[in-house]
Length: 179
Image (cartoon, rainbow, N blue to C red; front, side):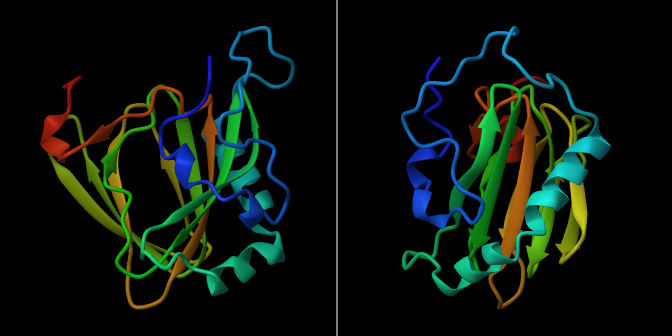
């Protein structure tokens, strides 16, 4: 299965502070017999995101924000069972409404702040500001939208298990198809 799609075209390989292990167009093995750890707890996802977030060289990329004002994603590492991403968030940028398919996830805010809006299966919406050094867990199928909060850019590190191959985007949270 080729891992292209969910904004892979926005990946900038030069952005990686720890070295990109996934690049656009690369074919990844997705079989269950792939080597390595095949599942992660929420706490493990946060710990690995914090480990990658501790790389001081990531912050330098805030000096080179995209001119178009959109966020930039860069793959930090990946296996069929785990994906690691760094995302820069210029002021005003947003992810749009999306889920992560069957993947669980966690993100850590390295710099700045994000506004996270969550659409719960009950139809209720919640909003939370996530600031530097804080983290969020993301359940499989959770529909949410994250946006840069405030006048400063933000930098986040994300961990997903398994891969984001089944991730979906939505025009609005009300378009939930599995409720």
